Image 1 (cartoon, rainbow, N blue to C red):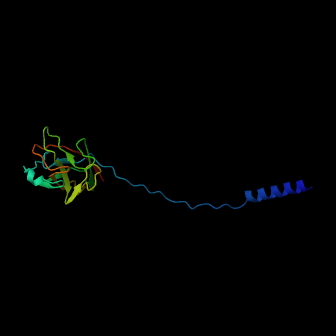
Image 2 (cartoon, helix red, strand yellow; image 1 turned 135 degrees about the vertical axis):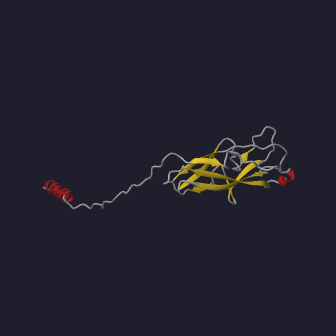
Image 3 (cartoon, rainbow, N blue to C red; image 1 turned 120 degrees about the vertical axis):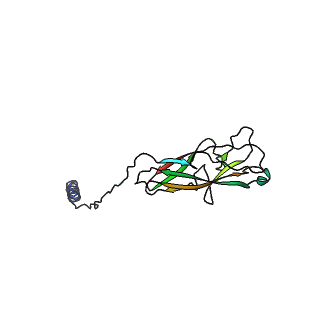
Length: 173
């Protein structure tokens, strides 16, 4: 008798749970937007492709951290899709010094200096792209004004030639 009573009670509880009202979460809306741009802008570095640093004396770079020969240059964008609002620069290449973020000198028998890039007064770390410029683009064009300079990054400068390159990519928004 007890087994029948327990079985009947269990069936009643299960049935009550099965028919109990359930809570439901409210629905929502997912809104998606985007932008499809035409091909990339036309890019010009300093109106060409070379930034020529001035000749400096080793005395100007005689202590670690000293800089000399700051030279302005520009990255110009033209022919951009008119829906483009900005372009973010990112640097890459084998000449980037991963410790300092400067550019290593690749000239044969060259000076031991490195080349440092600046965005305004801020040093650009080309290794992690800290302070890399974001170029404002309006009516299909934009410009970033940068500087390049020598830096005695690890020791006082030795005499010699200086040459370096760095690649950059632009991400358009």
